[in-house]
Amino acid sequence: MKRGDEVAMTQSTEKAVFTRPHALLPVVTNYCPGCTHGIVERLVAEVIDELGVEGKTVGISPVGCSVTSYDFFGCDMIEASHGRAPAVATGVKRSLPDRIVFAYQGDGDLASIGMAETVHAATRGENITIIFINNAIYGMTGGQMAPTSLPHQVTQTSPYGRDLETAGYPIRVCELLATLDGVAYLERVSVDTPKSVRTAKKAIRHAFKNQVDGVGYSLVEVVSTCPTNWKMTPEDAFAWMRENMLTYYPLGVYKDVQAEGFANAAEAARARAEGCPIACGEGVR
Image: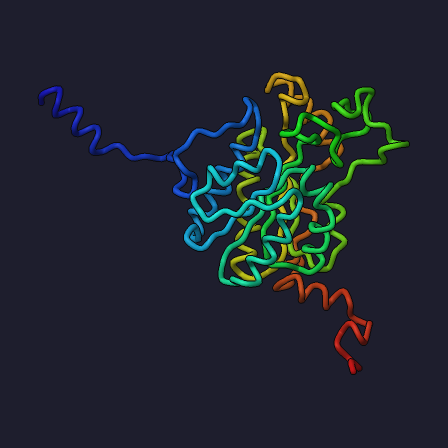
């Protein structure tokens, strides 16, 4: 057999096992070295591919580092004003209920200027999916203190560390939203190891599948790094995240109504309201 024939046979029998998801456009991202946005966006695209919903998916990208998401996803994308992604997602989902709608938000966007939209979309039980990147700082705008910045964490606007007496305590988003009846699923994950990446993908898939099945509002929080604004190397940033953020923001499932035996968030809410006549629809005039 000639050398050329050997090469042709090898090429014909090769099988691609790792390729770019179809829902992720073939462009170069502009994220900083060590930033986890690229990992998370790939996982979202993989899930969209696996569920076969790219053609009817609408993504919402607000202001912040996530604003450029519309350059990377192949599905329809809408840019929302700072913090308003849940409101825009609500409008899209209610007007086009057959669409799969997700918002991709950072902590400054979701937990600061957009906290009202976040809480009210969750308590209404909007059947949307939220991907929440928590890197404990404002990224794109220069490294200011965020609602999730840790106690004593140094940022551009807290050069001596976050002062709890004046700035208060960080917001733990999953723990906060877990108290709301409209929420179907909450999980906090990370993407700092191969194992954690697999766990994160499983959570993201669950959040999207919940929407497909009409289970209700789902949010996946990804504890992340920001080497540029933390002023660290990527390796040091991951080490700092593990030592500090993962102790303050423990990973795990914070709410899953299906795991509790309910079909959806509304059914779980009715069960929790048992014993309240008006909440159960009794005696309503």
